[in-house]
Image (cartoon, rainbow over all chains, first blue to last red; front, top):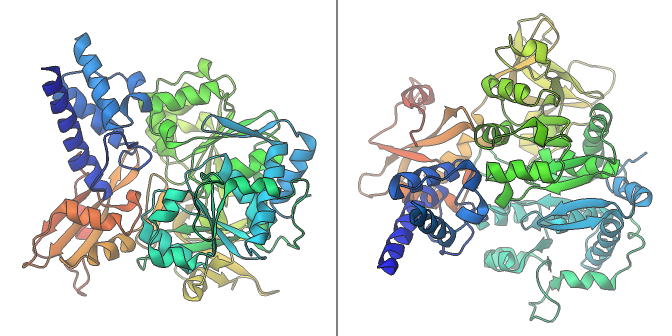
Length: 89
Length: 527
């Protein structure tokens, strides 16, 4: 069950980043472990669009202090954040 | 007194050999190490064939090696060209060919990503992240080779202050970036003014928020080195996250901060800044775009003891005017002045009758005169002639002045106020963007018949970019495809966030695309 959920989370995150953030930066492909800040997919405003998406889509609350590279730098890290937040709910 | 930039380092290395000069990505380097390693790299570059005046590209994310490389290139007599590590390879290839770079300092994966023609045009690549043992292509030299060269002294080169130090590429209206040539004297005019004005000392800790291909970084790097202070490079993993960035300012005990206003606005909105956590912070400098008054007032209240200065100036002059924020006047100010001329620089506005503006309230195009003014654009005599022009207001001797293209108003108190642009250049996050360059990227796609790029004003980043496109009816095209196409030609900060498709674009009576009409129809981008 967990596996199915985790796949879903990752797919949704990947799709949002691909369609809403990467496309506008002219980038078509990226890997789950790639740094989205280093490759320029996420910029200073993209970060907040991503956080809004996570909050609205997964019903989690991401505080300003949690908006960090450790939590949001890659698709893998974003998934970890959403899972750990969902468990605490 | 220093007349070439590398003397700043040599002087400080003599005074404070063991002090930390640069911090980046968890590593730091002392003044002695910076002096020695830049000497070694300079010798290596000489053996690569770098001669006086040769351009050397720096193409990797900013790090301790960036600063070593900048000094090393100048010590070898060369001119460094910082390349945006996030720019598409097509643009990097253009710049390498435009300014004839034969030696590139880069990372192995970036070297491999360059197109074949560009790779072949390079005679040597110094690769910062490759071990000596691994298989190298011909002409590829690992960073570790530095150890074979003398550390105690730089190669012998004869330079004067009028030699070029670096070239900064900025957006060009004809679809290709243009290289602004800056001499040692251009840079030092600014650095020496800053040193005196902001009293930078060896006790200071400076941040470096701007990318190295952006002229704001000139202050951070050279004023830190001049004073024997420490410069802390802010990388993307810190810069993009306001809370992380605030923590960085606190733990690194930054005393002098310099960035575009939008970086400060994001800190204000999302980082819970507190004066008591930043006891060392004494000066905040900002430049590159207009600081929204609402947020500047908040910043001034939040950090009551911090001096705030608005610096203004195109890359072609570094900084030419400044305005020190007066907290008592701030409440009644509706707009922030760009201020008065820096020392050793003269500015004046020229009205439509080609007279120098002397009456308060009058507007004109701002001109800049003095040793900070660029020679012009690399390999672009036409563009240079248009912007760096003979001084027709002074007949005693020949000299050039720079036309900024910025319209300003002279106020009663002698301060200038920025009013707008004469052309279609805009600013977003402090970056100069020529809308024409975006349009030519869009038009290079076979499906695009007509295209207009429009700036949509934004409170935080200054402007966001929207494009209105008319496609050839027989070809279907999606916004994402066009954005991806732009991504191969222009930097990410220039790609339109929103692309609207229309049958045809509105025209003025002379048949040109009616940008005013399009701007009026463009509400702020909904994101």
